[in-house]
Amino acid sequence: MTGSVDNAAAEPFLAAIAGQTVPGLMERNATEYGDRPALTGAPDAEGHTSTLTWGELREHAAEFSEGLVALGLEPGDRMLTMMSSRPEHWIADYGAQHARAIPCTAYDTLSTEQIGYVAAHSAAPIVVLEGRHEIERWQPVLADLPELRHVIVVEEADCVVVGEAAHGKQFLPFSAVVAIGRERLADNRSLFEQRWRQIRPQDPVGMMYTSGTTGDPKGVVLTHLNVLYEAEAVNAIHPIDDFPNALAYLPLAHIAERELSLYGSVVKIAHVHLCPDPRQVVGALGRVRPESLFGVPRIWEKLVAGVQGLVKAADPAQREAFEKAHALAVEAFDLAAAGKQVPEELARAVAEADRTVLAPARSLLGLDRLTRATSGAAPISVETLRFLNGLGIPLMELWGMSETSGAATVCTPVANRAGTVGPPIPGIEVKLADDGEVFVRGPILLAGYLQPDGSVQSPLDDEGWLATGDVGTLDEDGFLTVTDRKKELIITSGGKNIPPTLIESHLTAHPAIGFAAAIGDRRPYVTALIVLDPDVYPGDAGHSPEARAAVDQAVATANAKLARPEQVKKYTIIPGPWTPDTGEVTPKLSLRRRVITDRYADVIDEMYVQTES
Image (cartoon, rainbow, N blue to C red; front, side, top):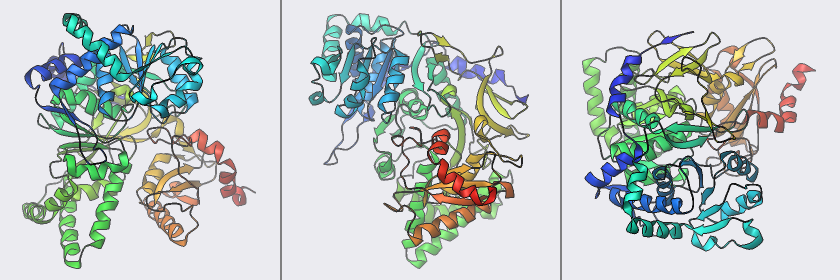
């Protein structure tokens, strides 16, 4: 194996977080910054929002925590939550942490069968559900969950579940649990304070279930040390000031949202604004004006498509001014990304173009304060990176997973190479096996996977390395490029090893394409299944000449950037949409390749029938 080793780099960050836990930092925030805003809910129908200060948020978490203890939640117990991004979700998670339990958010898109699996595997005695929609999907499996005793429901009108429908479980309103806790705090607050003070940095802070793309989901258990180290290390290489605005739009079942808005927000004393519907992110930016923003590639691609649409609709003079300013900024970005000096004359021209054209454009988008912009969860096209950096949005790619508490490698303004996911964050070691598999070691690695008996088993080898299952390359400066999942490489009948995600990222860079699945394992050439973006072609199954022409263009553009064996020779447009509910994608919108190849086997065979007959 080859790679980098930098154990000493971890020491300053370990020292900075020594003895710290998330509840400990929440106490600091409530004591020293109690009047500062912490959490703002989504606007209601009239556009009004409500905000909790850090003092109020901690008090609500304390009340809910004591209510959970009164219901019998013990240290080490798991508590499952299924609800959208609303203040009660944050309160529930922080409350379970203070009770020394292990909170876990389940994706609210899980099927009843998937709910049954994670509920049984976690053996959670308490679950917190939003309302009727969640209850209906849980009820069919309640009888098979003997460990589950209490179901807490946020929407009180949906909480009246009794008799046979309750399957022996007690259904309680969220507010009732809070009221129980409030009474306990009034009677003896010291018990609450003593309880959370027993938490150690090495204790669990939460658990996430993996998407299960290659098998049953795994319960990833992270510690306070894991998530606080991640926050400190990332901030050291790409700093933002304390008290930032943050936009939370991904589900809390996603490691990025947990790390950034649940844990990192406590470290930075942030003001988190909730956006339950990811489709409303672009509109929410103007209201929040965040200093940092993480996005999956599709979010950034949508932003690019929106900007390009505005430019196209602008009058000729405005369009020309933007295109000239943008071209100058892209030229400077390309030079810097290649490690070359930006000429002084070009730098001055870019500064002037930014002042007069690009900065006003960013302000219109609500991105005028943005200094940390990152993309992860899937490869993003270099074109998207270049376009946004040319707009003055410093978009950088990162790589990580639930098991690494978020980012393990990340590009930064001073260490950026488009097309890579950057070098390791400080104190993290990365190396490659002979077959290219990426191995990681360092303080961000999970405590282990939850086992059916309640124990936590570490997947690390004797030297502390985690085999990630991702395949990549490392350049001479330690920048990682992830090419694919180890189990998902296409090996054509001609023996060519091809990463499907490379092909798919080029295809989905086109706004017409919502999802693309590259096919070709044990086949003579690569084909693709295409699903149109419903926002661009609503209700169009690919029958219109406009949609077909757009996909033709997308495939041609992608092929121009791919090696000959990687190029898409044929494609089929599949009626969409693909969602977690339909089964083709996970809640994180990763492709379920086994489901896709099984479900569309006849369609796939048809694309090869003439060649193979």
